[in-house]
Amino acid sequence: MSDTPRPALKRILLKLSGEALMGDDAFGINQATIVRMVQEVAEVSRLGVQVAVVIGGGNIFRGVAGGAVGMDRATADYMGMLATVMNALALADAMDKQGLTARVMSAIAIEQVVEPYVRPKALQYLEEGKVVVFAAGTGNPFFTTDTAAALRGAEIGAELVLKATKVDGVYTADPHKDPTATRYSRISFDDAMSQNLGIMDATAFALCRDQKLPIRVFSIVKHGALKRVVMGEDEGTLVHA
Ligand SMILES: Nc1ncnc2c1ncn2[C@@H]1O[C@H](COP(=O)(O)OP(=O)(O)O)[C@@H](O)[C@H]1O
Ligand SMILES: O=c1ccn([C@@H]2O[C@H](COP(=O)(O)OP(=O)(O)O)[C@@H](O)[C@H]2O)c(=O)[nH]1
Image 1 (cartoon, rainbow, N blue to C red):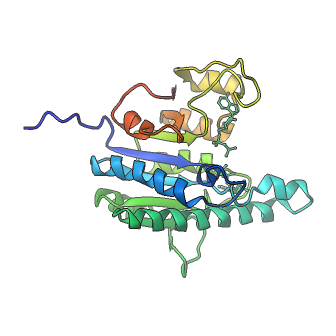
Image 2 (spheres, rainbow, N blue to C red):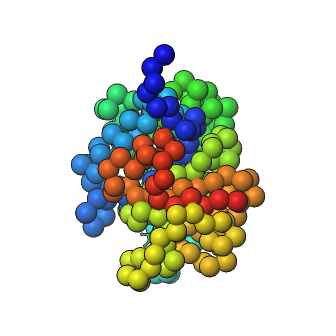
Image 3 (tube, rainbow, N blue to C red):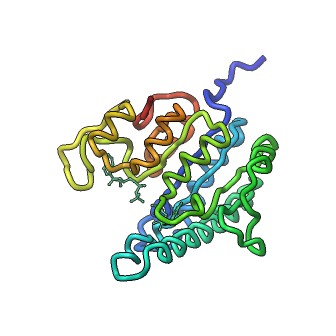
């Protein structure tokens, strides 16, 4: 028997924002950044943790921005969902290059490009140790990939939704706008929602609250943070029921 510490979690849903893929670039996908993120995912996958990923698309297209310049909002949102498919392909490619086996599943049928999301198939892949990348969000306009993370997390029975962001947790106010903001180590869904802490949208929070699916917000920039979360260490902010 080895006394190597065991991960505290068996199955996780990791939400990566599109902007996390940009690194320091102004838009698009930064190769060095994606490789580094995949290395962190590979580390926890090799510990035996089943990893599903929901990837955003904000680095390529954001529906609200299209809507704001006069484009039909639903059309703009479909463009946003297609942007997440591009990110998913890039992410899965980087995962395969790191020796992981990745499968992309899309909420929108584009079968020549990626397979459709079929829940039992996703569960099978996870059991086999493959990393499943969920693309195209929820498949519906007017939603976000944060809500897709809550939805897929609940569907696959993840123990925790891990929201990787550029900040290292939930703050009393947006830390990019208010330098005096302080970080919570834990906060309830009700408090996070009533205080309008803009880290995730209310739909995502409400779904996780109702399903009693906790969220941990942590930094994607901080090396080793993902592994620390998976090992059950105190990292970022826990949003709980
Ligand atoms: N109370 C808050 N605590 C932490 N971050 C916040 C808060 N309110 C707003 N934010 C913003 O939320 C962002 C994290 O969300 P993320 O999903 O990575 O970005 P986006 O949704 O814009 O792609 C942070 O960059 C931060 O500026
Ligand atoms: O279920 C979904 C998920 C995403 N989107 C669209 O896809 C864009 C990109 O997703 P998001 O902004 O959540 O990406 P992130 O902020 O994580 O990069 C959004 O702005 C929406 O326009 C959508 O319409 N429905």
